[in-house]
Image (cartoon, rainbow, N blue to C red; front, side, top):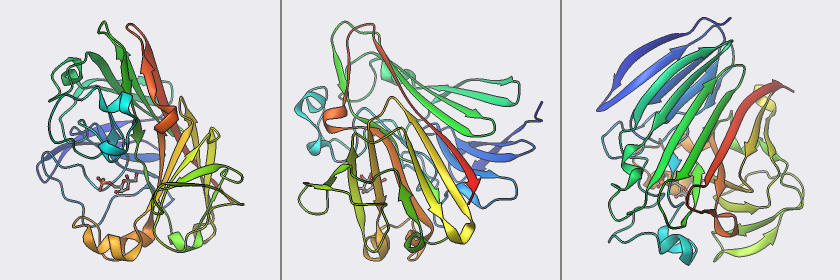
Amino acid sequence: MANFQVDTEQHGELNCWRITSDHAELLIAQQGAQVLSYQRIGEPPLLWLSDQAIFRQGKSVRAGAPVCWPWFGIFERNPDSVKAMFKGGQAPAHGLVRGRDWQLLGVEEAGDTLRIEFALPEALGDLPGWPHEVELKLVVELGQQLKLTLTSYNLGNTDVTLSQALHSYFAVSDVRQVQVEGVDGLAYIETLANWEQRQQQGNLGFAGETDRIYVNAPERLAIVDPHWNRRITLQAGGSRTAVIWNPWSERARELPDMADDGWQRMLCIETANVLDDVVVLKPGASHAMSVAIGSEAL
Ligand code: TA6
């Protein structure tokens, strides 16, 4: 049985919870139900929190695992079926839920796992410009690994189509030294070259700005980090898309919430449903997308 301690903390304008167990530490903000950091005791952090993070209401924190929903990325780049769901004006990047306060439904211990459940009641018809009724929940499970499960349950009487992502920021020793395993042979969309489709050869290493959408991704991906003698493992569920992003030096300088050299210490691998992998929910249907994050020595 693990010992869990839950403390409330204020970071700037945001209410947060710090959860400590014998083997890990987790920080979660109420806004966006956003996991801000995750670290196993005796290891460098697994999820990265920017040194220059801004903790402000309405603004997603550059950290952890923001939830992108009910669309991913630039709205205009989404399929028509996703765009047709939005009846509003200006559509923010990465959807409508990462800058809103979620409701904490409960914290429950089950064996050596702590289960924290959040819901966003506004998704039941009160999101601006998005008049659909979806029960949206995020369950965070802290055990030997960290597992995040985002569930959308269509309670309305018409189909709902959405794209989404758990936009995870992983902590690495130096992005120029790491490789992503599990992508060899996959087709990907190179968003930095006019969204051309290309094919990955071998593992993915990093030598410049990267922003790619890997299609038909396997359930298991990993980041190999030789300097930290660590492999970060990702086990996805309900997702066939992995988005891999690093802004590199020039773009990082444009981001007010990232240090000029912050890009060296992070790598996003986002468990997602985008493009042909969007989620179509019939009335009464639900979909769960998840990622379990762990690590092992090399
Ligand atoms: O997932 C990659 C991406 O869509 C990039 O294009 C990049 O802009 C990033 O997400 C961060 O977006 P944000 O709105 O959080 O600054």
